[in-house]
Length: 190
Image (cartoon, rainbow, N blue to C red; front, side):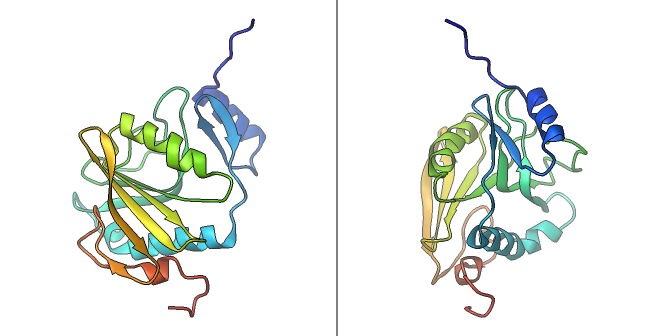
């Protein structure tokens, strides 16, 4: 019986060069193609980043880098591309030119039908191992956001918010987020 060979970040980089039009990620040693982005997914991603803009624009140690489609090299066989990820500038003063190998302070995944297992089971376990303090999940089709905070090495739910509310959600609880805007389906529905 032949042993299963796990793909590495080097394999991912070579594959990415060969398939420049595809967004690839490395999950549990397997190079997988990310699904095509659907309109609700793209809108929720963009609107979330826009709502968090005050943090992203700050300079100095209290500012954040909030990136979309950020590939993070956690382990030799783990390099997911997060829908949104944020680093406090106090921990990451400058963005690297290549892959980021410092775990983020916050990750947000936007759930796409057919990919729930990765975002609700595999990614949280990886983030727990690397002590990522906050993990959000957004379900655009269901109009809800569930926020988790790491406590004693495990995630616990700290907020479940639907699209009809405003909320202060850690780590961005300094401002009130407009969930109706984040989860809106048309520009004029807010």
